[in-house]
Image 1: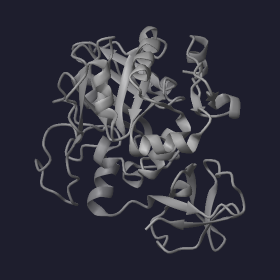
Image 2: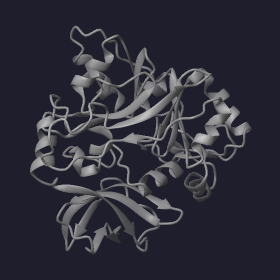
Image 3: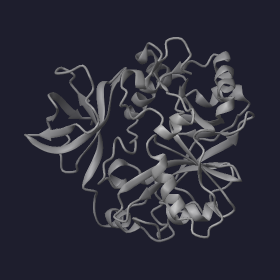
Length: 369
């Protein structure tokens, strides 16, 4: 999609950006992704009100074939996968022994292979963990990023746009309500905490209905065909900047950007989509259960409004957030939103008042009510 008129790649703007293929993937022929096509604000509006096609092919893709793949992943991760059926998807986390977020992956199963797509820069860590935990299990995890690419149809009209590819009737995400503290065992159904509908694509790969639209995993050899078919049907393209702005406004955290080495799932709203609270017996489960049942997490994810007076450039990830000269958190993803102005996701100490007068660098910031 970098050959489309007006395309500006992320690494052309910032050669240190996280939004570029991992070195091993670049060496295997995975190309850069587009930041914008000349008008980021218009592209955001398209994604917010209609539909747009976004190239997210820099995400890592791990394929896990094998007859024991579902039960094996069930034991290793935070999600209840034992009942995951063919053509269903969900989300999962790999946690540290102390319950800190190490990996986040989106999931889809096609009946033969469970597909995990993850943040650029996290593929090697996820695959390494899975390989270490194979033992005698009949599974064969591998890095499939060089062979498969992720595209996303984003916006309220995404399911209708998918008709162009011959796929119809994808159901909306099915989310189980998070139970209150000290809930009864068995209160949560024995299934993933969120189920995404998945259907095969004629070109190969699949389509998965998610919160922001529809993800498309396609063979890289067929990627140009899919893009051309969608554009030929009138679906406009949008860059990654527009996608990130929509994600921030929806307050959806991104692992490795809106998290740090101390982040636990409850701090960044990852319990509902990626953790089954009644499953038990996975690494880090004790911390998840203790925080949920005995108290609130020490920090929380918020949306900050920045005044943009001191700088018209959004702050970089990791910039401290201060209150009366004391650091109370850090900024994750910061964007210029077409309606909200300069906004950012931030992780703050839980006791930070909602009406606190915060500073991010030299910019005044306020918590979204």
